[in-house]
Length: 349
Ligand SMILES: [Fe+2]
Ligand SMILES: [Fe+2]
Image (cartoon, rainbow, N blue to C red):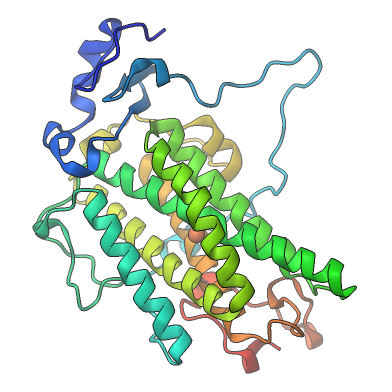
């Protein structure tokens, strides 16, 4: 389908060239952060559009539906639990002030990661928010472009999918080694990494790039987190809590800019989100815009934020996972999305 010659410049297959040019803002392409970008594919008007700055031999439909003789479809292993509209609208950016030295280390390291992401995505000064309140301030002088948002989403999601898997795996090994029950943590952690992977795959359906970064994320970041979780699961959960604060903040800003009309390609009534997303979140008909999708994803991030800040507050060896526990006296289980700073141990154990 994509047969034009490899190029490091703007490379658009001939048959699609007329449809593609408006997809990305040219000025973004010139930014240092975007030189590694490879492919954007947006489903619009029933067609798929492509855009590339890397050799076209790398371009393909990354997630073709696998046709087999007997299987009709493969459903998600962890079906999404769903949200009410109000639950999604109630999510707000928030911040848990560091209280211990470990919290402080996690927070400072998160600031460093955010600085790296801003640099990598070619963010201009006018596009950033008040530095004193980096996870709660949402006003900036200049909005980001759709392509800049997409880079940030993919950067964020590829990072976010790792900790749950590392933590789940280490707790699994710990349980095998010590012949001790895990008390329900593993499933929540693995489900979190599954959910993050769905976020990433959804965006990859629309934009595919930064392969090097993804390899880096697995090669370096996975091992760093592996060590960090062995040394201090508490600080690692706190770090993930801060990462999720960033995620809620990022998606809140994006929703705001869509509502203010700064991202017209995503507000186009003909724009539809990928099928993968419709199936996973069971998005109802008429609620399948980019803003709807981001509301779902933001609510997921708010859950991860509450879960990880809470897990960091618990006794890592002994305490059961409050989010899958049944409480005495008919008390309902904790709701992490509505608790940005996480539950204190005394509140849930
Ligand atoms: Fe995510
Ligand atoms: Fe998350």
